[in-house]
Length: 357
Image (cartoon, rainbow, N blue to C red; front, side):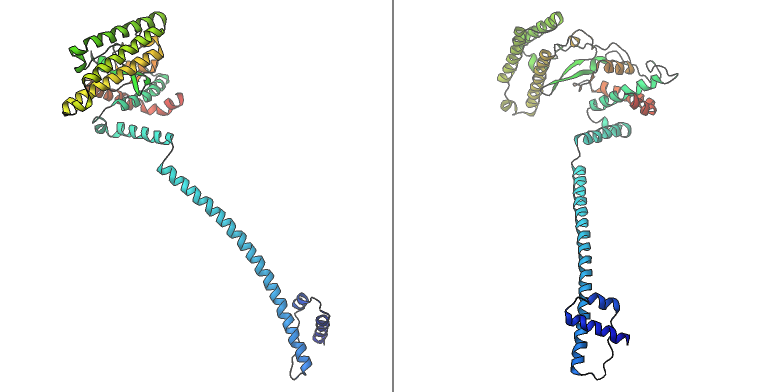
């Protein structure tokens, strides 16, 4: 009886055109079994089944829409995360392939340290100037840290300090790091004389005597004026620059690269002399720009007799090693071993040295 009552209610609502799908679903409408109904009752039953199916369809459709919206949202979030993850991977890869300047410099310094500590034979195959300057920078902090420790004694005259032989300082070329046109202002450690000119054999020929003399006189007057007044006047600057240009012009007129290229030996002599004149011109311009009396009053002159004394001297004045000239290589290698031994002896205080620098 109850099922019939629910069926009647549903039929009335269907005839009235009301929305009753949810009611049918919630009430779980059960139609009476049909064993031999008339045509009208069959149509009523078919219409009721259709309406029930339509309700189920609408519910499933709503659920599908909600599910699709949720999946679309999740997909968009995954797409955004994937996009930025790929950008980050691309950026990291590019950084590995082309790191910033500071990272490259740190890598280069680590390589220098590794060569010094593990591959001395590779260091000695070429110019050791970079390795000496690396040791100088490290020892500037390490020796200070060592001497600040309680009970520590000065490294000078200690067993790890190596004495320099007479004449070693003359084979060491130093620089204050000043540059002009890529060339450094360089002087010998024992004299600190920037006007000490070692003329190449070609420029010592008679045809250049007059030009050399003019240059040296102009240079000496400039140095005397700096010592007396602290700077150069306009006339002295122009006179010195003119003497330098005339010397370079005379050399270029007498020795042209096309002529010297006929022989490998002649071209090598020509190239060495040309590089010397370029360095000489750079030193002149540097002299005019700085007017630094310390370069000329002997302040940079090294008067010690040991490797530690040399480190302290260079650290005090902010100097560093310049590349050796032919004949100086042996002294540079000997000093490399001396500074390396000191570095290994005090390297255990490296962390303290780094904190103090």
